[in-house]
Length: 394
Length: 194
Image (tube, rainbow over all chains, first blue to last red; front, side, top):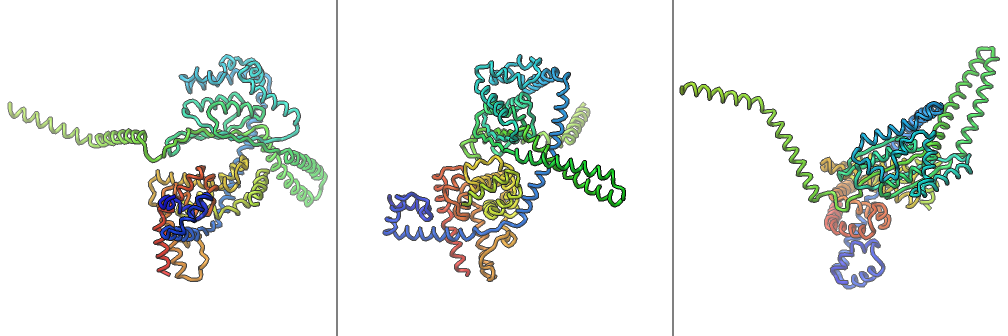
């Protein structure tokens, strides 16, 4: 290596950023080169100088505000989920009635059909092609349960064999582990060039698997690219099928699936609830028999305490049930990240030019509008002047 | 091992013992805060972004799969948040707002705080260094802050910023060369002053 090349490497030489052979070569060179020696000395001193500035302690309020935030967020999501579970229960009760059962699939199918039609009439045929999915089936709403009908459909469809497997596997798993309580979560990152109808496809999947959207966001990032985020809650028995379906939508850049076994906690909460309810009953009996006011007050205070605990445990129970029966699927959809930098580029320049043009046109309209009264006055005066001039000539 | 301890804490947090998350905050808050402070140049942003980092990490903790160590992941999030913030700032054109406030309000502590004159000089030096770093482009600022000030290894930085180790090295090399004369000047000034 020559002097110049060595000089290039010196900034990395000082803190072990080079390979063995490069280091030994530089060592050799340094013996005879005083300018390089001085340079190394400078760089080392600079590094030591910078290192002195690493000591900063975080202010105490950081920890506090983080913890407060977490607590706040937890409370929010908890109460929200409790509400959700109530709604779900009511919906389930509603559909448990027989007369609704036949109406429901037909209504759902009609709804899906309408949504698809209203959102993207043009992409309609294209959409069904990519999904391996026929609208006739969708409208065939005589089946009692949409989910069962689907798994039957999978078996008859050779293209979707792999899906049949995963669904069956899951059912088997459920039979073996009937008592296990598991919370499942998955995060999928998708990359797609054209986002035109991706939202409809997601909605379609949501309908298809009886899921619902807990949260959805879409925004334009600093590269002017659209990003979409979904948080779906899916009945756990449909979970893996839905993941498969989502994975087919676009290129999957990353996916994580995790599950948490909460059997222990579930059983624990259940047992405590049972005990407390028995205890409550005993206190109520006592209350009936108590005669002195003092006793009555005491018993009532105890009852209140127990009632409070029961309610918080029931809340926890509902939360767990909701988490277990509905798995969470988070989907991040983004454009493939561009290789070129965000700062400049021909296309960007053209875009900016068009923007600027529109803006200046807009400003022109405003300016014209604001001076309109004067223009009118001017025109009026001018024509008056002309007519007077004409009369004078005559 | 530190990372094993982290893993134990994370598993406990994921199993419902949320209070234990404070252990993770305690362990990393100084480094996260000082990284964000060096990157962003002012105290409010550093505080905000540090908070966002921990909240995001907390939210995603259940899906963290230990592919990398927790600390790498944490600082990856930190670096991304800082980058977003800088970009955001650029679009808002309040670039000049990067204020270099007085360090006594910035929670910066020095070892020799008994000598007022030296303390003053330290503060001046601190201010000058921050100015230098703040003038770098984000790509270079990142690597200099992470390597030269916060002392992360080349490998760690490569993982945090999701760029190949070679790129990290070339950026550091260029940045060091670029800063060389300025830092020497600052050092000389320090010496003359004291």
